[in-house]
Amino acid sequence: MTTSEATEILHMGDADATNMAVIEERYKRLFEVNDPANGGSFYLQSKVYRAHEALVSEVKAAEAAANAAKGPPPGGPAP
Image 1: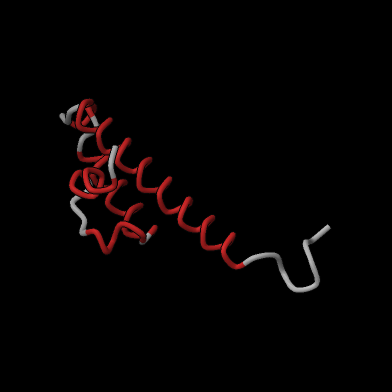
Image 2: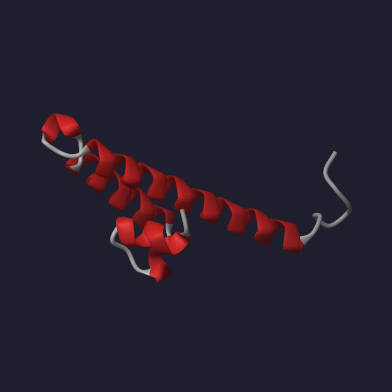
């Protein structure tokens, strides 16, 4: 799933796509609303789950890339 599609599913702007607090809040709300036990749709609930999964993966990859760009700590790599 693309980041664009995931942000549409979670009803968030592209600027919010890197904010974990917003991602988690939207995910929890939409996951509960679409719970089949509450009359929701399993299909929509699964789309919300996959959108959350995609955005979290993107945020973690961006954080890893930012950390790698910083290089090793002063004095060389940690033991």
